[in-house]
Length: 55
Figure 1 (tube, helix red, strand yellow):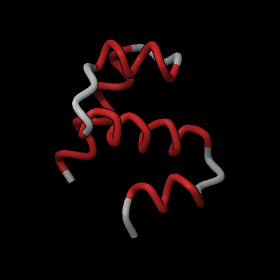
Figure 2: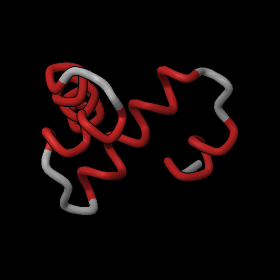
Figure 3: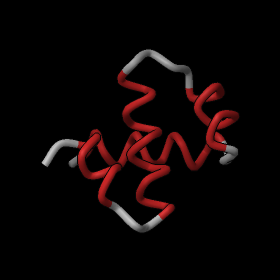
Figure 4: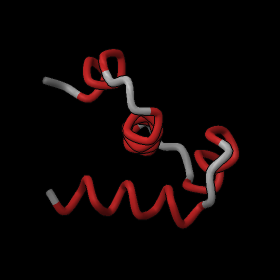
């Protein structure tokens, strides 16, 4: 299952935010921009992206 489909089906808000962070980063967004758009701390965004990359 790809990330966009998982984002559409997930009921967990935290999971959806992490997926959106990864998707936006893959589109070239800076972590500061993603943090502002999702209203999350930049550290949270970096952790979500790092976790995804390391899997």
